Length: 125
Image (cartoon, rainbow, N blue to C red; front, side, top):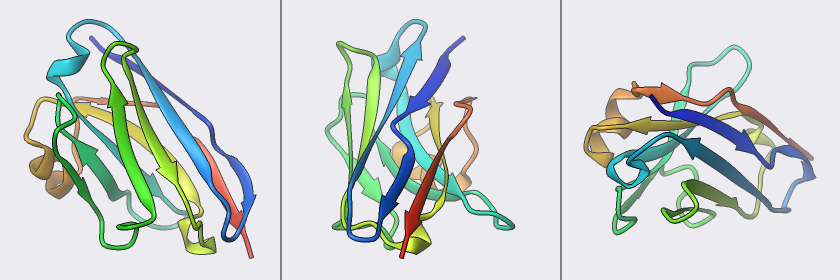
């Protein structure tokens, strides 16, 4: 069993930055593909970024490529999402996910073994 707790959300002006963190409890954190997803009001949950267990490979949605960076610290059981040059359309609840699938598969299926409770990110124009 893995429990995920996100933090770092908040209100920021367009062009600003935020860093989200997702702390995981449980065993074998480094064996899980980790991902960030987001859901805006009235919309489906969308893929943002995924990262392999050892952090060696990452995958991004086109809408965030070049602005967001996913990383992980396996010693701290934590995955991060650094978000720069934020836009109002980035406003959403951001969810952390842990899964045993390949990192590109998690991005495609948007289904995961474990989910966090979400953290709100609001970008004002």
